Length: 267
Image 1 (cartoon, helix red, strand yellow):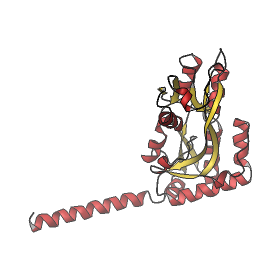
Image 2 (spheres, helix red, strand yellow; image 1 turned 30 degrees about the vertical axis):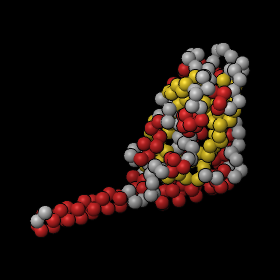
Image 3 (cartoon, rainbow, N blue to C red; image 1 turned 90 degrees about the vertical axis):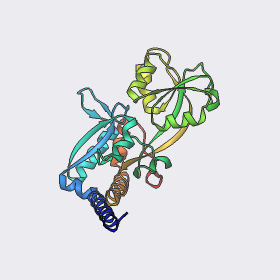
Image 4 (cartoon, one colour; image 1 turned 180 degrees about the vertical axis):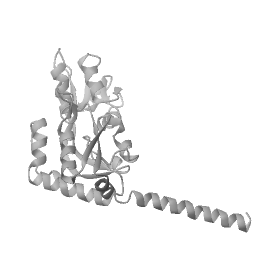
């Protein structure tokens, strides 16, 4: 490489570095960008019973949707709901197609490598359910059985890791999973309690019963990594809304239970 070429290469590298720095700076304070735009884009996973679904007037509702509305209200900005599937939750935040994600996303070590989380704002129980006449006490009892899960969820990960002998049937979202169970395609499922309730409401045959609880998940609001101001605002907002009971009121309205007293100390 000649001296001129080397200098040119160094100059190009410096220019590229400057552009990267500018790109990082452009996303250095998403909270300020949200306030300046007067709008917050909140991703929600629609079709999840109790958390995000369409009501009788064909309007989005559920505890996650109402939480998103509260966030926008207290920020003093308009709300843009971005409706996605469960599988798209983490990628949506990684690619910044939404500012934040309020979509019953469990806080896990693996997900923390890809996105940042607020302190927990809600919880859910992951369960294995099946017919009364099928004995299932733990993962080993799933050997040789067909079990349905929603793709790219903690349910999927846990069944895959712990039930090597099971035949795992994956569906793209909870709505499709519910349809499969209601229609009798599958009758053993790893899901959450809210989804199980929706299945049993629509199922004409024998209801499915919880066989065992796999895990209680703490749910966090996901946001792009490095957005310290936005995370700080969200953490403070959740703590305040839990303390004054407003988040509990929203959650209890749909889930008919209270949030844990130590919720914001978890995660």
